[in-house]
Length: 355
View: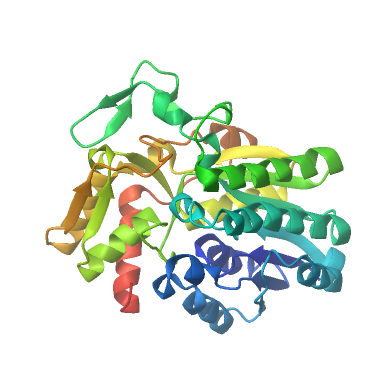
């Protein structure tokens, strides 16, 4: 039996992965204890998504396990052993604002939880492919030191800079910068995943995501920028822009394109590799540009306010250079651009009748 095991299976990337891999694996095991509701409130609960997976995927089995509980994880891993061929670790505390309130919770979920997953895999399915969703926040606020130019609707990097054409690559230092508490806990997890690949020879990969998004995201004010923005547009809820004149730039990658990248890695894995993965120049926008797209979709003004206080450690401009991954896996291509992503999220929210 071939098993795909996914943590955070009720979340955006986890649920997309469960659907994607259900057709190519005999069994998909999901681990999710809905801590997102604890982090961000009931409006961000993933319970609806877990229920949807159970209804739609006949080979999906769900376990409400806290990844900080090694004994329960090991019991599950020992039950299925080497039948586990792919481990997708997407569970996390994902907000740098929230992490500052409960640093112990943030670190034990992100760092200790990742170590628990790695060790359980090493003991019971050491030949499995292990993929970890990291974040561009591991680079801290170093990107804010780049030579940025203010344009009418966005910040942009100076056209003479090497990052202008493709974006930021994996050679950027993660040292000597302000990461936020969340960024620091993800650095610990990120490096540990690399180490289990290099030290123990496991097939591990770190994907440092830009803005991961899609219609199955339970967006909240503190996490899930594009999903929450669309949610506010659908429900006509006021939105607050934090700093940088609303011109901060993000590259947005649709969850399907992210999981498709995982699939390419699974078929031809390496050990201890790191990839920046986001929308790159193919799919990026500023907050003001995203708002303009939503106003066009909804046919009404987007209600928002502005505060000069930017979020601590937040990036002014981030575009991922994905050329390292594309060089290793040249058959992978994007299927979603920014306008299609926003439209997909918007239409899905309308169809669900709830945001």
